[in-house]
Image (cartoon, rainbow, N blue to C red; front, top):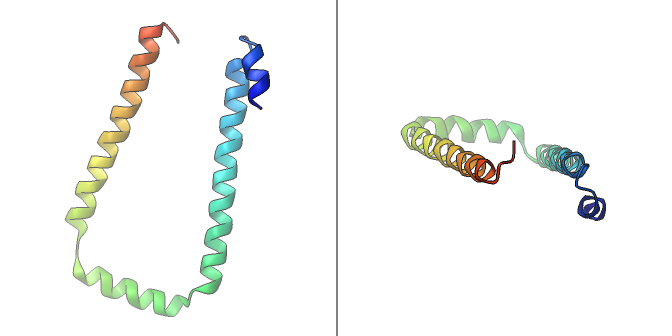
Amino acid sequence: MLLPVAGHDGTKRGWLTAASIGLVLTLVGVSVLRESVRLSEVDIAALYERHAAASMIGGLTVFLVFTVLNIGMIAACIWLVLRGLSDRGVD
């Protein structure tokens, strides 16, 4: 897949888009298969009991703090990439 990208400047974006879409679809497919196998092996009743016990412990504040931190890091990465692309003059 990378060989056609190296030779053609006009189709570079199209090939990279196709490769990116293919990668995302592969990752989603593998994740669905993995979770299907995991759920087929797990005792759902015991899992619900564990979740009920875990919900009584708390930790929502820690979860929300790390969620905000992760969103901030993702936004910073996107900003850095966009800034790098604008410095190169890429639309």
